Image (tube, rainbow, N blue to C red; front, side, top):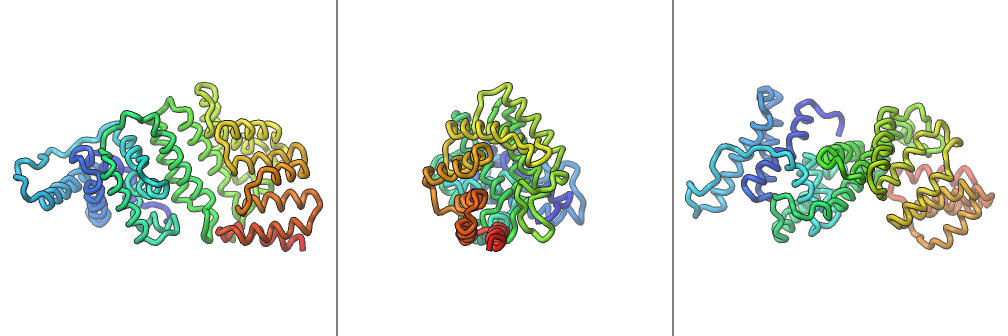
Amino acid sequence: MGVLTPVEDLLRTAAPQVLAAVARRYGDFDTAEDAVQEALLAAARQWPDEGVPENPRAWLIRVASRRQVETLRSEQARRRREALPPDPPPEVRGDDELTLLLLCCHPALTPPAQVALTLRAVGGLTTAEIARALLVPEKTIGQRISRAKQRIREAGGRFVLPPDVVARLPGVRQVLYLIFNEGSTASSGSALHRVELSAEAIRLTRQLRDRLPDDGEVAGLLALMLLTDARRPARTRPDGALVPLAVQDRGLWDRAAIAEGIALITDALKRFPVGPFQVQAAIAAIHDEAPAAGATDWPQILELYRLLSALAPGPMVTLNRIVALAEVDGPLVALRELDAAGPQGHHRVSAVRAHLLERSGDLAAARAEYRTAARLTLSLPERRYLEAQAARLA
């Protein structure tokens, strides 16, 4: 996607505020979203040549509101003109973006639909940009967004702050985490990172934290994103090849992001009940604070993964706990634990088993597992790395 121009950055920042104001004023999220997209396109065409208006957000709201009124007149021709919502245009309210985020993460939607709609409505990405970022055809993304808006309408979703905000927050945090993860380590394709996705997830999580400063898990999620993204400059070589954490050049890590992430998680752990995102952020902080791989505090990481297994059990948590166990008690103990854990068929399970087998001295078995992992992954950088590991042991 490249670096945003000043106009593009302004439009992306203003988009959710404009959409929230128009949707709240006219009461229909579906048609409001279409109207705002037309206003954004008009601005993208006009502003580079004519200049940015003195109040760009008001300009966008006015144009989108005008388009919304035209739509209402067209769709409800039987209504008298006086019955249509009058000017002045709606104003932006402080809780608008939180309301919009909660609406896009409506429980009636599937996670892929929530991700696409959030990137479109809250993130301000176009359908084409979302399609490129997620490696999904543009037509598919367009249909996904259209069906999502229809599903919200059928479920009775309205642009109002729901009474169950706290109950919906876990879903919102999970959607932002999914967006970040896909940007941080792409599940498929030729690139390891999709920076536009991870950057957007961080931006949206910052906004969410601004509105919910007393939510410890939002703070933990933002800290986790910052501490993970800080390593991105060292995770690939110039040719795109993957570089494992243990051999990364730590001088390339973003120290400002690390400092911010550590400050966030330190404060959150002091002030709030411990949650899964806070534990993951604490683990990331330990990695980032180690001056070298050999100085990593693996016993503390293992204890944190045990805590995470109790708070939010899952196959990837189990796998990461086993990796930490290998560093504390050795590869043979970890291999027995991996065999007992049971989950198979994922490339990361085979990659971990290969690493443990290599450390235990069974090079032939390790080579076979590296090859299995390479076949299972859809990520080209990961596949090349795993194939190189297998070739190294040949």
